[in-house]
Length: 140
Image (cartoon, rainbow, N blue to C red; front, top):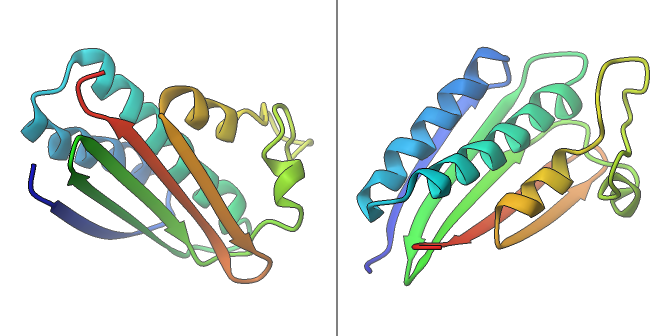
């Protein structure tokens, strides 16, 4: 398959979580996906975008960038924020860890992303934001 790509920039407001899910679902239609493939990528995008909204910009509205591209037999999805970043990334990647203990947060966002995608990489720097890189093999 040829490299096919999109880049989307949107505000970190909760209504854009469903917008991002819709965009990745529509983009993925070009690979004739199964229903389970669509559900997996939409769930992973939902978690990544929600993390940006809730954790990346806890005090104010910011910008989220989502990229998607198809290369060889893989769908790549990248979700970036330019917010507060993650102070202790290894701790944040642990199941049930949450920095919002006073809210109804399960701390399973990264674990869910990892369970629905074939590969997930997270890069974050305090004060610079967080980048989530996800890959899913097409046809599985």
